[in-house]
Image (cartoon, rainbow, N blue to C red):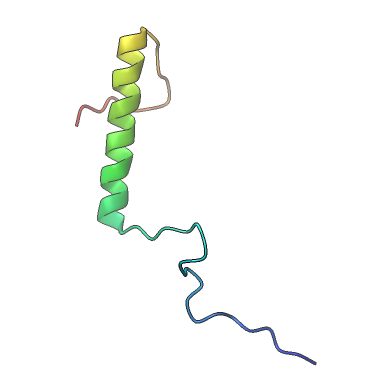
Length: 55
């Protein structure tokens, strides 16, 4: 029987996977929420489900 091999680096350069640290992920989420709120205010829309965030 052949054994299943796992590559040494499953997140190599030949994939679309991106590694992000926890701090960077938190910053990205805050930026996204702020951008959504800014967009909603400009468009006159109501965004529900997202806490009020003004970063």
